[in-house]
Structure formats: C-alpha cells, structure tokens
Image 1 (cartoon, rainbow, N blue to C red):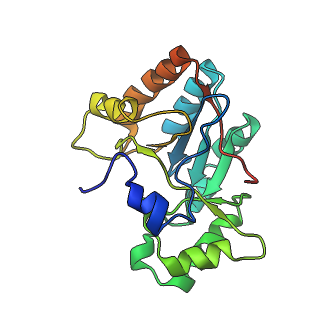
Image 2: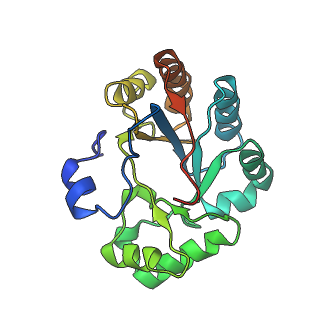
Image 3: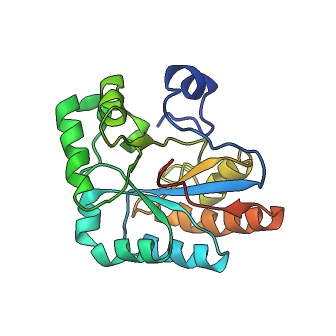
Length: 212
C-alpha cells in the first residue's frame, strides 16, 4: 500500500494548489483533526467522547450511505458543534469513475449532508472532477491533508500511526483519521494520545470552517 504520511510539496503547492492541504499557521496555534468514512456505530461515538474530554472540535467527512444508515449519529456530530463534509455517497475512487457519474454521486450524498466541504475518497480526484466541483454556482472547498495517520493500513500498529502524526504535526496541520471498522484498532489507540499531546502543547483543536 503506497502512500505518503506527509503531503508532498509538489502536490500541495504545484499540481493541486487549488485544493486546501493545510491551514494558515499565523496567530493562535491550531490543529485540524478530520475523520473520514463515517458515521460508524462504534468508532464515531468513541471519537465524540474523546473530543469532548479535551473540548476539541473536528471535521467529519461523511459517506452519504452511512449517514442514511446512522442518521442519529450524524445528528449528534452536528449537535456537538463539529463540522461535516461530503465524502461521496458510495466512497467512489475518482481515478476510476467518469466525471459525470462522480459528480452525481457527490450530489446524491448532498441530499443528506448539508455542507460545501468536500474530500475525495482515497485522495484521488481528476482535474475535470475538481473543475466541476469548484466552478459551481455554490462551489465546494476541497480539503485534502497535511498529515495522514495511516490508521487504515492494517500492516501498521496503533503506535506507528501515533508516531506518523506526532512526527509531522504542526500548527495549521490538517490530520486524517478514519471512523471506520477497518481503522478502529489503530485509530482508537492513536487518537487519545494525539489529543493529549496537543493539549500539553497548548494547541487548540478546531473544526475546518464551513464557509471558507
């Protein structure tokens, strides 16, 4: 499984500079934790409990079909003051999906996810799909990431995922975890320790802005 824990400079600054990879680091030091693929009946409530312990806010990029299956958990995210984003209806890989079909799937998810934030599943999206999403009358802001925990990687331990984050995180970082069955073992180990680390550093944990 090939991926980079730290977003490559050439992607974030040259090839896909229209996407948001990191937030401005000026002023108060802020970390932006994000969670992909939920809601999930075990992982998402656990995350909400951990965030509440540290008075932290985060952003959840939700799959439309999971919102339909677990609407109560989705509403809990909103009630707790977290931001949400669209992660397609069926977790489509943009590299292997025609543009029109991809955009239709995003629109299908939007029936239940009221947000102008978007993250492509697997981080894979084509230029045509990007253009279709950001040139709409009500355009999406496409958020990628600065630090990938790797919690989806079953070859890693929870400790390795923790170190992926701690070795790369800095103010302004957008960090990816997953509220999914696959990531549960590693995420549930790493997340509380990341929250403790940020708290000890005096870093604020906030949600991505809904109307950037």
